[in-house]
Length: 435
Image 1 (tube, rainbow, N blue to C red):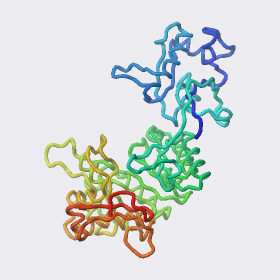
Image 2: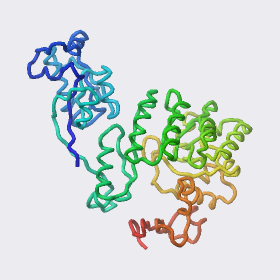
Image 3: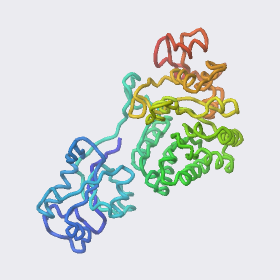
């Protein structure tokens, strides 16, 4: 486990935080200190909200160990601890903000490493808190040691040493794992180059699938191109959540399809949501669907989020918000169904049960023929095919025993009414339920 520290850093050459011990004493050539005095307040970069360290209350007043350190600097400079402005920064933005001069001093968690000190050109003043690194798992998994996590999906935040620490731990213990690297707002602010850099780091740490939400970026097509560039370079699959709106002008899906065709990446690209396709004329939709078939782009419909969010501002003839599921299936598009949100601000209900999503899909997408069989395939062999796991969505001798065994007479009973009993096997071992 690596030792992590809450660090105070100031731009190299400024030595601003070093003034604490000497009160108002100024280091010769300290331009940062001069700028702070001229401005009349200190700009302090801190965490975006960590209880006990940096957290604003309902009135916007910041409290915590890190913000108190910044107040101490303000008191040393201005004899007034309130002459400070707090700037919440994510892990990936923290050092860039300090280097660019957006903040004068950084007081938040960050791992102090030799490479960072040498490459970033920052002055690491000291440590005010030590912490460690561990894994948070669900209690029902009955995991007693991190050594039991082989094969687990591990969520890590991009732009942190956590990515490398996790990779080192699993490699040194000869264990396999799946990286779920989480990046926040770089692309949303239009920082495509930074987003690419973070994505490359995630791939280097072991991420084996690329995802994104292009419509949140100032230039969605440039964001799609960047994501496909990285995926193409590393031979990785892509799942992009696009056109989650009923605005017929939102057509990122068309750009995704065309770029997939040009790059010959068919079979590796998925467009999720694609709600706006239901708002365009039939002829336009047919051209988009046919192009997706030819390019080999699959689609994942997400009925829970679409039903709840799309059309929530309507009072009459409220739309269902799903993409053209039936038309896509009839045309030959591989269509899966799932849920990307469970009991949160986007979808207040849900259980994580894909059978539940299959049932919702029948209703919301008006699957009128072979409904149960179609919906069943949308949660079994079709997603397995999309993920390059052919044969994993069906029973066959010699297949890996990752199974959900339900007490139902047939597929129609399972989809229509749900499982009476259920058991989950992973690698042939019972991990939930009873046989």
